[in-house]
Length: 272
Image 1: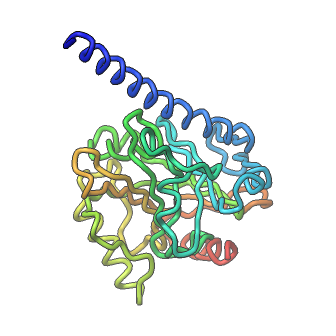
Image 2: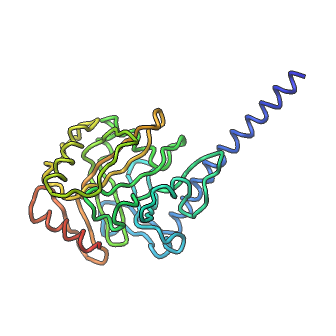
Image 3: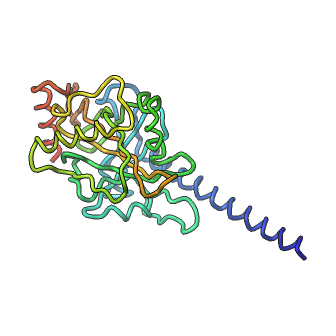
């Protein structure tokens, strides 16, 4: 009798593991199909050549506001936004399907509902799950290793208004109960916050970042720590280059140069 009970338990366990593995596989298949529909092109270094079929993405999900791609990692996903709502896309994927109650919780990378969907705030915050199969934002949870961080300094953020090349400047380990501000009352307070992020960073960027008071906007990407779900890894970055859609040639934001910073500010105004 005991043998049959143990066998039944073993078979049930194998079935459960098989189902979980299937949900991970299915979740990634869904996003690979989304990338195919969107005809995402992110090869080379020419931001003007990077392309996304935004109309095709909007036909699937009108909440889409961007696409994130990090070379050398699995991060290659759409970014969505709902005003005042950060929770919905924890449990729903880009296609609108709810995560299974027992299995992979893919969700979708989401811009904070407190942010402007045009990415024009002082800190633009995008989050996604840390999955056991290494997908979604799992790669960001490894950026506390200086070697990994410095090998992946560039993040591409593509939007309907234009394309950004972002360069990382800090990795902070933050309590899940902490609030990261999206705007500041003054430029001084904004730059003091950027400096605090640098001071608290788990890694030292190589080459070093520009002075905090020369950064005009920050983009923060975060995911949970699977070893302690009450904490988050925040990857902070700044716009190194920006290309408005429909403009031939590239506008550079060389941080620290007043004229270049003016270009960066202007690009944010156009995005509105």
